[in-house]
Amino acid sequence: MELKMYDGYYVYRSGVDEYPSDPQPVSLFAGKNDEAFCNLLVRADDRATLSVGENAAFSKYGMYENFRVSAVCSNPQISVSCKIVGKVPDDAGVNTSDIILNQDYIEMERYTGQQVMILTSVPAEADAGDCTVTVNVYRHIGFAPETLVQSFEMPLHVYDYTVPETKDYRFHLDLWQHNSNIARKHDVMLYSDEHFAVIESYVKSLAAVGQKAVTVIASEIPWSGQRSYKVSNYPSDLYEYNMIRVTRKNGVFEYDYSVMQRYIDLCFANGIDREIEVFGLINIWDDAQLGFGKACTEDPDAVRIRYYDADEGIYRYMDSNEQLAGYVKSLEQYFISTNQIQYVQIVADEPDNVEKYRKSLNRLKEAAPAFFYKVAINHIEFIEEFGDSISDIVPTINFVADKAEYLSKRAKTSKGRTLLYVCCGPDYPNTFLQSPAYEIEVIGYFIYKIGLDGFLRWNYTVWPENPRERLSFRAPGWKAGDTNFVYPGHNGKVLLSLRWYYLKRAIVNYELLSRAAEMDSKIADQIYDTVFVEKDPAAFKTTTRTAIGCKQPEELYAQSPENYLNARKMLLEALEGK
Image 1 (cartoon, rainbow, N blue to C red):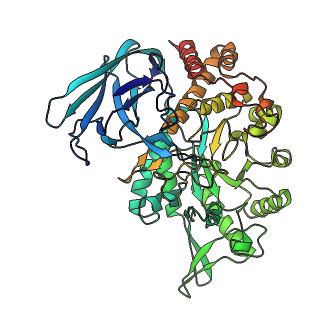
Image 2 (cartoon, one colour):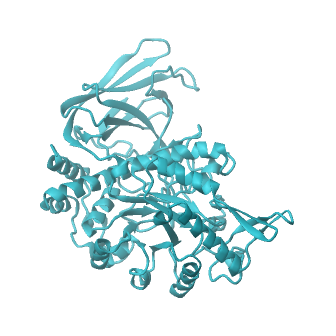
Image 3 (tube, rainbow, N blue to C red):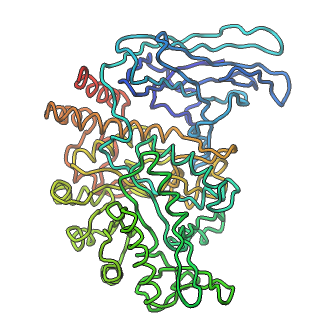
């Protein structure tokens, strides 16, 4: 058999690196209230089971060997857990480690590697200094006693600095939530008590990574299901539905905000409490030729508000501007009356027509002047047209590179936020299944370098039909991993991913850098020298492997995990004792 220990940037890809080169010795470090992780690769010469728990494990195929992994820290204040990392095929069909499984053993195929994450959690009250993490691998077959196969002893240094609690992060993380998809994948009725019980697991996972925004869906299918109906080779339901229940009785509309408020309250209770982003009132994704057009022909947009007509006992859609204006005004007044209006942003996702957006914006402002507005921008003219007249703007990374000076100034002077986002593009840096683990850290450092407020991504749970078996969807336009940071568990709870942990590490690095730079302004330049090959942000304007003249990853940022480990170590050293 084969056992190898790798750093926290390692990802096992079956068939791509079946026999990777010998890794360097692994040493761990962390602050207090922090985590460090590394990865064990196990490969057996025959079929076997691999355990990370205390229970017995026999193979469903017969009597085969069992390998058990356990880990402990010499400092009893520090906990170490072993987590089996499940694989999912990428766009090329390569089984790639990503899913942190909630199970204590797994079947191993002959000669196929299995990755185990070794996660070291350092509590805030832990003593600083040096200790050791020991990982033991045992073997047995049948009813014979276990024998020790190999031990790995890794030094762990705990810095005397306490990483801030996620609720205190300065970084504004905005991962859009798609609760209708969560309901479908867990077989529960939309916004039932059972659904909210499932949602809570996802909300806690968002809070744990530093999420700051609550997603509210305020109309029917604002993205028209991401137009997934055009994907004939992998039909997937991606529709999102209104959280607000609308009834008309005796000709008068009544609005039930209880579901929406219950979700907001759940998020706020878990520390996701800086923004309420409302989708579905502007820049609806329509497709009139295929039936996904307007419910109200008077509307400059395609807002779809379904209501129950109690007098006739049927459902209808609002079909006049007067009705839509009343709906928007009622929502505004609800947020005012509940003292939540200061958190609310009405969001437009990638509008592509300036005049159409202006008309829709004016319609909303006339009906509900108290609202603030936010735009995810993938057309550069929207920065110039609306950058100073709306609250929050979120350009894609290539526009940030092109307008770095303007956006940096805006972030410093505007009352609103200026974020950066990536989605199905660019090719790099990004958070795809195929993306190197350090690329999200590149994005985090880039955000700090420009002086922006945070990061947005449209995904968290926008899974295709069977995400744990086939994650690739709409490739090559959407690369595998574009739609999610987590997976649905069979027990009604969220399953995290390696990429979730990479995202958290990137955000913690931002927090460390922002605090270290307050004490020593030179530290930022030292970090940039360690991470970036190209110091000019404009070089990130076009990042694709096929564009002529565009800079490739190795020309933009470091390609060795060692650089990113060193950068984080520099930050913790600068903050030690503070």
